[in-house]
Length: 392
Image (cartoon, rainbow, N blue to C red; front, side, top):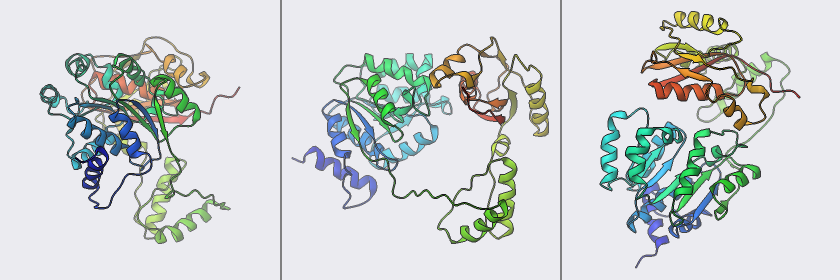
């Protein structure tokens, strides 16, 4: 009888289409812990193959009679890539998100019939009452494994803390101890790892590797002037393999660099907030009690220039402290609790959301979540300026 490891290697080779493929250090060990119904935190570099761990573990658990895996992932683009990866190894993966409302009932039926191996959702989906009652409630009694992708988002000390990840901790507390749990991240220092471990449970197994990626190099070149930088790019870029990205300080600089590269025969396109803004169907703004006319006036004029209707469907119902005065991400999120309200004027269309100054990014994040719940299909944030960091 073929061992679990040999069985998993065969699936791995099928997924990668490589006859001699084998596990990287730590991959099989992580899968084995999950097959033993343990909780595992994997901290490995991007490209190591964390998705292989949870898809192969799901495949083997399903063959043992376990229920479907619930995979919580923060980005829709990541979900699409993960679904494609799952299909290559014969794992049926589906997602419930704001873009496929018409499919929710069918997916719920497929889950009830045990024809789904992996359900992918965003952490914000856990705040949706309909999802909790109609999908999560049914899945709870049959869940085979819980996976938390980008687990550093749980930590107050992580660079990308998301408050909806807090709901995951409550789900973990309700799960029986024999349900395997996998948390993965490629972005975690010791403080973040310790924080995530404490929130996921003291009995969690840590599988940690080097986060260094040999394919990435960092080099600092000093140039005497902007013209020297432009000349260096025109000379160097044609000799580089494949395509790349040039970051500029301002939108004007981005336009200037792209134009210069095109003049020198290099195919270059520019992308910045105003480019993405053209994909919106309506304009909106972040209200301010201190400057009630400044942002709305500008936003209305900009929306007019872009040919977008301007609808003020966001109101500020109470004042709040400045975000730059907060000590960490948790305080910044807490500072915005109950500050904004979205009216029923909101349309189910892409929205351009304009603010004057951005301190932490959480104002955009919170409002994007509120607008999404109110029906906006996408939110494109645009800030007129970045604030300086808090100075004590």
